Image (cartoon, rainbow, N blue to C red; front, side):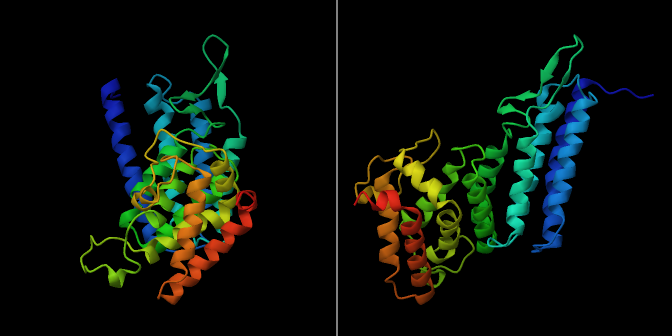
Length: 302
């Protein structure tokens, strides 16, 4: 019977990791936009597979990265990519969020080691399942790559992450994505619509109209949380500095959430609501009203 060295097994696991992602992408693309798909169930069963493999001691001689950390990356990659194909306003998004909550509610994954002691499955990003390790990393990676996907998928993904943040998953880490979305949409100098971008190539700058739905998702599904983080002046180590337009307006602090930044977003939406494009103007006005609804504490500071 053939035996494989540790190096061969690690290479095999790394190759499977790449193939897994390619397979997920291909399957989701082939299925297309389907709010009634059963991907959520497949994801739940994959969670069970990770659990069973750990309890059976599968690959227990491998380093943690190859024993179960890559499994976690694959799980959350699947979740984030699946969100792109579920309509932002459809309840199926909540069902996908529930899979993350279900995993987290399973608590710390553990089993007895050779010494008969209970050993928790720890990773470089916390414990499985209670800390949902690597979820934030995979979600952030998905968003960073969203500039190359259709705007409808960007909107869907943004709505999903906003829903996750609203229920406190890895609180407050997912707020970084909100800052990225809002900075690109409301703090960056860009054309109002694609027709005004002055370019017909694939690398043309995204317009306000392209990005506004993704930004709207954060106020619609996570408004109270965004207001709370603003009041708390929540900052991060990541790239969350204010955008060019906010810097011109001397918004301080210049990084993270703040009341001043919230008010800048509100005022920027007021400005956009008076633009010549009726569809964009109407969405901006709805967003401004949503901010007012969920931002009562900040509104009371004026």
